[in-house]
Image 1 (cartoon, helix red, strand yellow):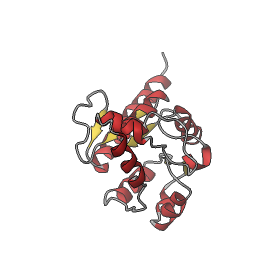
Image 2: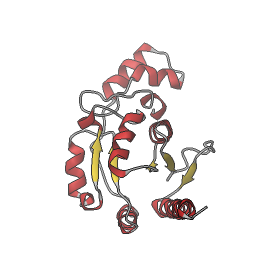
Image 3: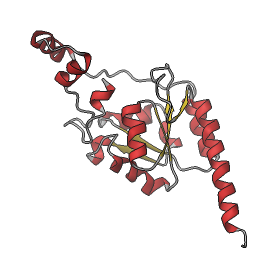
Length: 189
């Protein structure tokens, strides 16, 4: 499903990822028109949402490091309410939602918008390879794949973490390396 959704760079009329049921069924190897019709009638995006236990500590730690945090999300206008409902807005410097900018991940332009706010080099933590990793790479952003459920065992070309605590450790390493590089470039030759 994510492979199919990752083929698009622009949102649907609600601001979310377009979903082509026929393309999805083709990916599954199902070519029955009757089954495709039934799936099309049943496919709907859910409205359930929650915050993982490691999300707030992660955001607090990133904030304490002095890093700029930008939420980039393929989302409908309802996402803004959800962010406020959970109090996440106090940890974020900016929100970039597909419904507002007319772009969705993996389009590299949505990542470029985030970099205008957060600067470069940048790190993107995302849980969908086809949208987050591919999009980040296309925008020259360092991707971290948050693979909580081991859905990407074959992905080897990108750093994977299973939780946000591990993501934080990786970001801390990157910050240390970046600081070392800054020190090296400031030394007289």
